[in-house]
Image (cartoon, protein in one colour):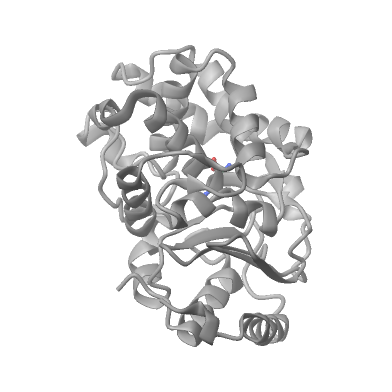
Length: 309
Ligand code: GLN
């Protein structure tokens, strides 16, 4: 794919104008105040090409709560630690159910359908707790190294309210524990999960943080190989089939790029061998994906012709 033929600043400028004309659409996540209070007049978009060039538009330097986008990074860390043994504990199928659904866990005896729904991410968190001496520090270091941003950190207020309102995640973790698929103290697993959800980053940081997935596992920001080429393609495939939950089919249809969303309104996407991207708009659709973030990615795919299909 030859991106030199594309006028990327012009494309981003057009998308920015189109999105701003639609500000107000969607609904912010309201299960915690810190997310409920974000105004619906923010939009940022950033992309990082293979050679590290950044193009950005709008509020691309304003930090937001990354929420479930962090599941990409924790999955990478867990696979790095235990490799294919992870698949004995988490499946690789799209769920077709909401991100926080528990319904399949009983039929599937505590084996979550995929690592991107909350149930799967809790098992991934458990794997990290068992395999890293200082898990929280390791996650922060991973994020800082991938994004090249040394001040990436947790928003304490968000972490605290995730915990206080986290009844469903607490239930999910305990339910999985009842099947023996969580090894560590359930509260420790939940604390790690709430911490990963509460990380605060901007679009440029996030686009850089997944650049390794657009470069066959090599992170140009830290100049290190993060995962093998094969593992990078596999993480991308999981983002395609499960990264946007029960809207993964729609994302494949309209966007055609592996993507991972979070309820803070961010979505990262990967165009393998070409670029990594991040969009942010806090208003969500009924599946919990950024409404105009998705629109922006759809328009970007249309205007550039980028698609894994
Ligand atoms: N903190 C949210 C939760 O656990 C994250 C979900 C998401 O971003 N989709 O419910």
